[in-house]
Image (cartoon, rainbow, N blue to C red):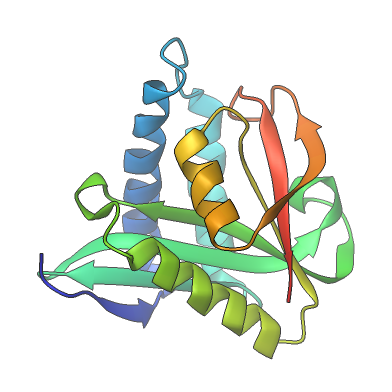
Length: 171
């Protein structure tokens, strides 16, 4: 495997980020075989990604190798109501972290996560949160290994149609 490079995402990267997210979400059937990604999620995710990339408070990185994208991470200021409500003082929300299957275990996810946490800290955030599927053991082990802890919040049947748990880390 060759080394990767990391750069800031721009509005022009919206289709790339959407594709990376769709590839990542396609792997969810491995831990939930009966699950099918809701069409509404794809539509919402595409619109949300374009809007976030245009938001100056949003931070997004893309990792590339061999001339193509292999991963991305993004965060925005935390908001109540899963991102639709008023801001939560001092809280950053990790929006997405997806890595293409060929790069799983390479360290790129950890490097991107560290970069996002460091950027959130440098912007004055005191805490960061994320939501991940409750039944996704690989993701949960990764976040816990990186110092994130479950908060105890669990949401049944969110937009993905899966049980979601919240993780957080103090910055």
